[in-house]
Length: 560
Ligand code: ZN
Image (cartoon, rainbow, N blue to C red; front, side, top):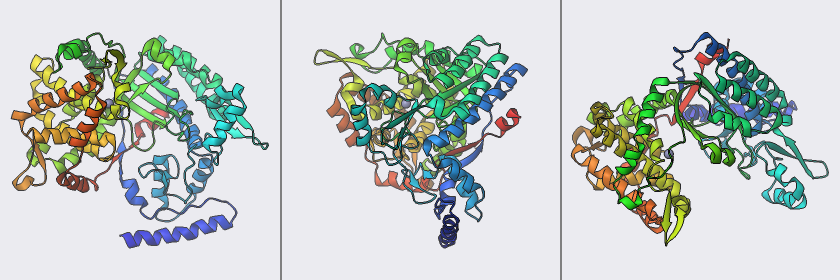
């Protein structure tokens, strides 16, 4: 099989040369293992529950899908100025590796493999750190020199909605997004206005109208504020948001869109949990003085189904939730909103978590896995971020956990939220708020989830935080090695599980409550090393997909 693939790779070296000699540029050499790379993403037909939508909602949806598709066009160009031409050339590429290469190009939104540190899988060119936002050969130094030389243009240069070019005289050429991407933003604004005209929902009408204005003015503040107040059967998150694609400075925001439908039943269940938050805070296994009884709980959480995603919202590994907006002024005034994507979560559960459980859990434990438990664990992970110490006192001074734990904060905070999720579900079952039926699935679903998270890297802080949960619970006897036909696999011991979770949560919360950087470091070092057995289990997981690749056939139907 490998030889076979290599042979095709060679064929394409020749194809690339042919292109070059015809003067049409671009090296189209395809990585010989392109099929393996593509298989890391399980192709999944993604559908939303649209049964409750009215004719009006469907008409609105159609316009929103039109606007969303345009975000893809912009994002391709933000990733690389050569992407558009490359995509054209790929269309006519022939040979057995051409189709997987085209599909992988779509997954990665460009020729660089996002699961492989952005190494090229098509051609040999390295990805410019400034993506398509700056001149390709621009260094940090040159940009910083410009900022010093033209202080009056500093805000424009560091703005999250400008593209940076260079004039022939080597001076900055700053172009606002509204101009640079006008070809796509103008029709997107028109589509949002068309949707605004059709909807009878006032909050949606307001957001769409203001966001259409923002596409043409680059001023997103008013529409970000309106987005926080959205409450409609059909919603959209659309615009320039995250700045991860800009590896040079992290200034420039990428366009993306999430077209969603609300899930009233799930949202009602969520509000019921939110009412329990003060009780859950009092229930934490730490001394009273460390409980955060005054913490506000006003940041909304929504559960939705995705109809379609695009741009930065649909590349590489898919998000199961997002927390927006990023504008601090909006966060100060209104907080932020967390949106959880139920059907994406469900796809990952079916395609990734269930197969992982089959590899790492004893057959009896693997059988107990449930979607309901997984969904609730993710939900209570998110709610868990809002519980426990936030603002603390250290050496008599007020400070924040985040500031004290610095680079280790997010690893500990993520692990805390995982464990708190399980702890809170156990407590709510006991209280009679959640059904007893969840109990059986809770433990194995949580353990399988640890393996899923740790796959993304056991050697960096986040992976250590995941491995630490596992090792701590092993030490407490809450997770044990399987025997007999479950050799090399794991199961939970229910008589010790709840106690282990409580102790683990206590230890992590106390590290946060005391802002103990050294203690956190020691905790992660002590428990964060994967054992040889665990590493063997990771080895077995290599054959399973890493993530999903959504195909939005339902959206294509709805857009007609
Ligand atoms: Zn989290």
